Length: 392
Image (tube, rainbow, N blue to C red; front, side):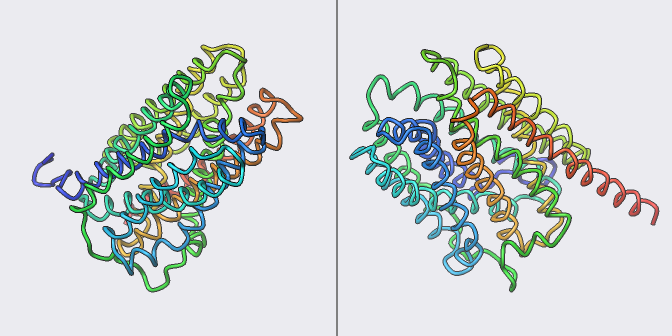
């Protein structure tokens, strides 16, 4: 048990939550970059590649809207088991055919499973961790769920040329089923949920709406990066794409943990604007697709900004909510995450054909710049609130 003074940071339920999330999310990320390529190889091209990610995120978003009610009725353990099964079983079916209907059907099921897993994780961490160390606890959880991205994104790309799509899909199924082992030790109780559980109603609160807008904008760019970078690099440069995704995946959880640790000690709101700026600089580097160093460094910088934004926005939203609203806040945050990724992938698939990949990535830089204003506004609002409190 990790302790600071008398405050435990890592309890047994938290440890098994980490194990379960690690295995299930590795199953998901292993297939993230190869399913679009698989769909494209079946004759559906860029549109099919974008739809495969977009449909996954659509299912995720729809499931996230009902997650507070699901958790209140069935509890953490049963809901997590359902999520893991939805992630794992359909993955094996992908080996049957790269036809677009099969890809989209399995993507729908996997998206629903993803929603369950990613909503339960932050809600449980927020409930179990000491309030004064919540940012660091969420940062540590971010590292645990970031490891699957570090391993899964590049390994999937590296394995397919060696062993083919089928064995990789079956490996995804096996990893998801392995996650069932840790579920036994998760709390079976139902999550506390407010009487009025509607997820989107929380957007009426400006203190929640601003972080959601900022985060959704950054995740839009992340969806483009993970879906289209392997397709956008020059022919024969798949190694560059794999290395760039690895750099992105390594920087993201480290920045998430560092942001949580720093934010608990010095305040979370001060990190929001630097996170957005870092993401913009990183995405600007990716515009130079012919330069492997620019792509790799840009992906790493974007990953750092994205990781910091993940922790900062989530902790800010939780701090501005009661404990009975943690499930709803987690669902809303994940809604911004997955909705942004899905919209970004589908929209970029439409733009990249006529405009080309460099122009498409330049457009994403411009979209990211739009997040500067709400992030500045939130930082200014937080400073004003602290000043008012100190003067009382």
